[in-house]
Image (cartoon, rainbow, N blue to C red; front, side, top):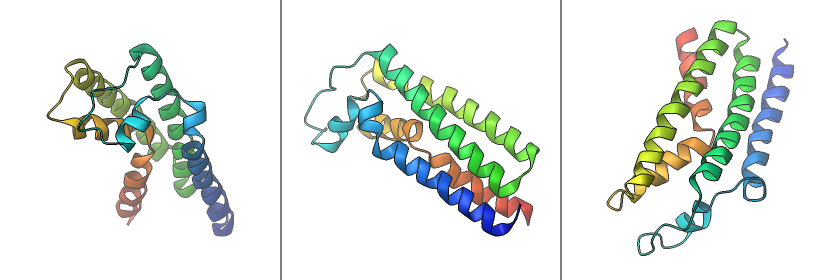
Length: 140
């Protein structure tokens, strides 16, 4: 694949990630969006339904992961890198989801930021920003 084609496709896929973020409020159930935008240190957790919340987090993570994996494949075009990334995304969702559920269950009041950051890693495509430089570094 030519370099210009790679850049156009990767840019389009990054734009798709931006669109997921832009329309997330309309597409996904997340009562914590407004909670963390306001003065959350003085308020209790908003009412939420764990099964519905985790299902929507899963779908959002899956959508971001598929787009991120497509970006990684377009940039590197190696199945070994794609397999590792797929395993990494699956493993991290499992670890982050369990951690998030435990933090919610025990209502971690001293660690509001723990819940905030666990949620952020689940719903935002941060791993692609970590994996791309790591794969470029490994390639050299």
